Image (cartoon, rainbow, N blue to C red; front, top):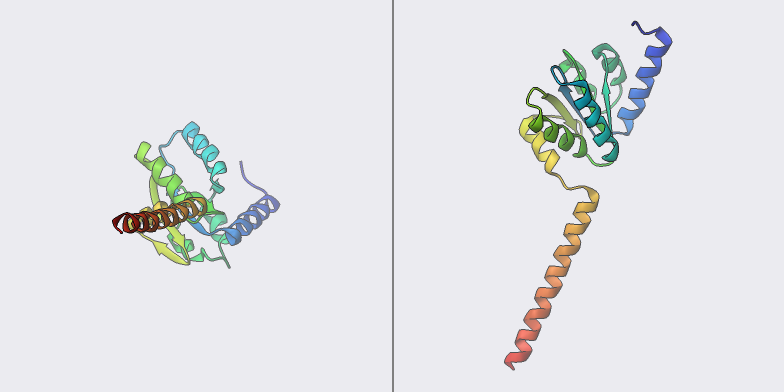
Length: 161
């Protein structure tokens, strides 16, 4: 079913607004993946503050103009599933990589973070980045370990004397 001009403009505006708020973007080819699996991926994305869309490349190209992700415009071809990370730059990458492990026919094409097109290794590195909460927890554990280590060395010195 063809979209009317107004509907296309609304889609472009919506995607453009989301792209301006996003920290990173990843695109993949959803061909040969069952629709119910894509729907499960969408449900997981909501929990991770990731917006996922299947959109025509021409509409997506127009949506990405004047955003940090305009470099993707030249690379768009074939079926496209795009994910925008809104809170954590690695959440969309983590979601797509975990999904592609279970569904080998799901092919990750490109990603952009901090205005740079990433290769597959860099996408994996981005996916491994801890979330804000995970980073705080690691930092607190590190501080506890340092404090406890100093305290144990102090007790050791006291017992020696």
